[in-house]
Amino acid sequence: MTVGVDKAVVARLQHSNQRFEILVDPDKALEVKKGAKVSMDDLLAYPAVYKDSRKGEAVSEQDLQKVFGTKDIMKIAERIIKEGELQLTTEQRRKMIEQKKIQIANIISRKGINPQTNTPHPPQRIINAMEQVGVNIDPFLDAELQVDKVLKSIKTILPIKFQKVVLQIKIPPQFSGSAYSVLKSVGSIINEEWLGDGSLLANIEILAGVQDELFQKLSSLTHGNFESKVLKREDI
Image (cartoon, rainbow, N blue to C red; front, side):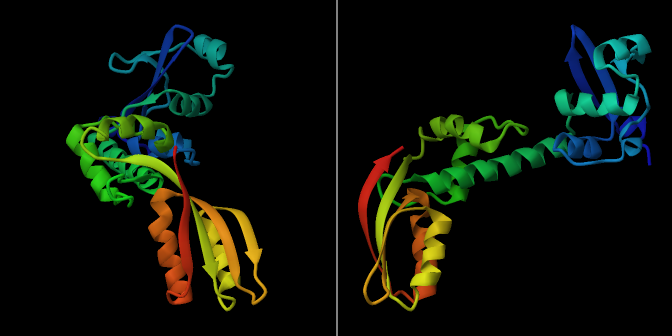
């Protein structure tokens, strides 16, 4: 079902010193922006490409052909959404920013620690710090690419640093096979030795923020019957 003009938002692309606008369903356009396949018939409020959608000034077919290599409105609309700017509704923007904040906080929590305690900051504490300093989050930019900016901002109120840790782990023989899979899933095994009794002695490099997670998994698997020691800490 075609979206009504009153509920549509503008998707806009600047190309060859010209502006191309279409009126689209905000939710379906966002799905297209994220790479999903959507029925283009349900996407457009009206099958036209505008120079200025507010004034209703349409782009000529000749200009569309010249710039996009086609007059097919559906193909052009998909390109405008994917390559151009999409006007989000207030609720869409709020939800996307919240989701992106969570992603960024999870990354920082896994990579970083509180240098005062050598323990990771919970994601919610990082989110609270982000909100306190008022750091701007781009709803479209990949979370990994925003980590440095966010980290620089929250460091003013939250002691944090990124660190790698090399641990030596010893697992008794009855748990060594299963524990090996756990070690591989959370870090990089840099040295392993299978002892005569079947025990596993392994050196593993992990992000400091996942150390507690690793110990919890090993403790659950071995009922607390494992040994560990820190061999090296390195800031990253």
